[in-house]
Structure formats: structure tokens, C-alpha cells
Image (cartoon, rainbow, N blue to C red; front, side, top):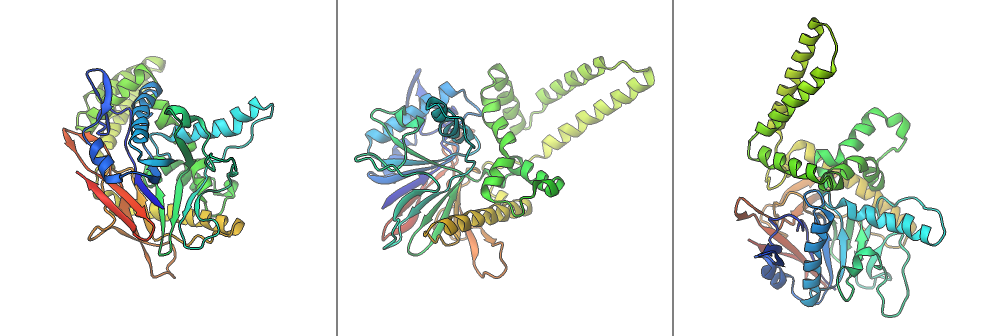
Length: 415
């Protein structure tokens, strides 16, 4: 078996280095040939670990148009037989669309009522010698036994190329199990506060009514669904408002708070105009609004960027969030093992993306993390796939992870 793993291509973002626009025509970007040479040909699977299409910065039309070029190109270049797609935060809608198609649209078209979403479906690649279920598995998904057709695929994205490309969708985790180790691949958005905060708050203030005990992966995804949906498609598909949000975001990243201050002053005036209190209460309201403006600006100025941050993975709150995510993943593995004969061992290496800060497979001093169990002497080793964007005229680097039977894992740095 031969596979390669990448993340954070962000198709639809103008700074993508794999696909670009030249003289109004979509063409390959400056780093596409490096990507092609690194991954080689005839991979069994190309694993896309999130933020592949960027619905939070571009319209559906734009994102899919750029993605179509890429997927058609890798098909022509014979890079992979099938694709395994794990959505991230910028393309979370991919997983929502899959669930709409599976649980609602397909059933209604057959005259059936909708059924529940699957908020998580684990992917498993089992390459252990002699394993009775060797190969790729989608947990809880029925295998199709049609000659000449893949086991899964058949969903909406297959026809983005001609002839079809076979896409397999898992979320949010993929487990790769070999004779020597077990590796977890995930995008990594649940390590950042925004994407995990609803679940964390919910467990603190409504634990007695939630009655979930230890939170597994599916429960984590369910509880954090609203904010994930808002920041993915809710912002990217807001038309003229999207442009304003993107302008403000770029300004804030560059330390320019002028637009934020302007909008807050206007908001304060609108609130003030809506009040009909006595002059004393007006003074109090004005004071509160002014203080609120100051505190908001102060809070925004303190926000530290996750993207391109070397320190992110070493922060104590991130470590704790990572441990919770890992514990939830172990619950998922335990559930799979209880229903199947897979016997997936606990992973001791995790490959993630999201931060765009590459950490190679053979890094001299990769980040380590204590496991959730003090009884185990092992520590988690963390690796990162980097990203395929240019920022400030500089490409910050991507890491392509590879695996081949009898050769094991490795990674190739693209700089």
C-alpha cells in the first residue's frame, strides 16, 4: 500500500500555491510541480486532511472552481487511485453536505423520511500483515460489492472530474494501523478554543442535563456544530458582508484596528439612539458603551494567531484540549473495537494540520504530549502538515507525509 497525506490547500483563497489565477485563467500554482514530484504516482490513496476548499473566505462557486482544476490535474497526473477526505474548519460544510445527501436527500428521493446525521465516521487504513480486514474501512458504512467499483465513494464530489474521481469521506479522524505502529490523522481544529468552546462550556454549565459522561468524538462534534457552521459557510457565503469581514480580519492581523473602532462607534450610536432614558441613564449607557468598546479592542489586540505559530502546541490550554481530544478518540477506538474484530491499538503519533506550521516525521525534537493515562509510559508525538498558502510574499512551508508498506512513514518538506 502506498499513501500520501496533505492538508490546508485552501482552494478559493487567492494566496494558494497549488492553484492560481493568471490572466483570468485558473492554472497550476508555483508549488504544484513540487507537490507532484514529492507524492509521485499510483498512490492507493491521497489523504486530504482538512481546509481543502475554503468556504469561509470564498463563495461556493470560486472554491469548487479552483478545486476542480486541482482534482482534474492530479487525475491526469495519475497521483492517486482514490481520495480520502477529512474536512477541517474552513471546509466543514463538506461533511455537512455528505450527511445531507446520505441522511436526507437520498432518502427523500426514495420516498423515505430523513434519518439522523452521523456527526463522526472514523476512517481506518489497516495495513497489518495477515489482517482479515486489510485495506481501507469506513466505520459503520456499508460496503458496496459492485465489480469494477470502489467499496465506498459514490457521493456528490465524485463527478467534479471526468471521468469520476473516487472520494471517501471520514470525519474527523483517520486511523492508520501498521505492523509497527498506529497513527491518528485529523485536521486539528478542535485544538483551538473557538472550534471547541461550545462543547467545553456546555460540559461545565449543563453537565447534569447533558448526561454524556466522558465525551466521545461524535458528542464533541455535535456540541460544537453551531459555531463551526457559522464560521465556515456562515461567513464565506454572506455575499457583500463576507468582503467586509475579510477586510477587517486582514487589518486586525496587521495590527490595524481602525475599521473595528469605526464600526464599534457606529454600533454604540445605534444602541444609544434606541434608548429613551433620562439624562442620567443616558450618561450611564454612554459610559457602558464606551467601556465596552475599549474592552473589545483590548481583547482583540491580545488574540494570538494560531496560524504559523510555533508556540501554539506548547500552550497549556492547547495541551489540555489535545488531551481531551485524544481521550475522545480513544473512546471512539474502544467503540470500534467492541463492534468489530479490528483491534485498533492506541495511536502514539498524531498528524494534524490547521496551524500551517510544519513538523516533519523525522523532526529532531518534535513536540511530545503526556497521554491521558498516567499508567502508560508512552508519550504522544505530534507532527504537522503545514499549509499551501503564501503570506506577505512568502511561502511558509508544507509537509507531505507518506507511507508505504515495508518502508513505513516519512515526510517531504516543501519550502
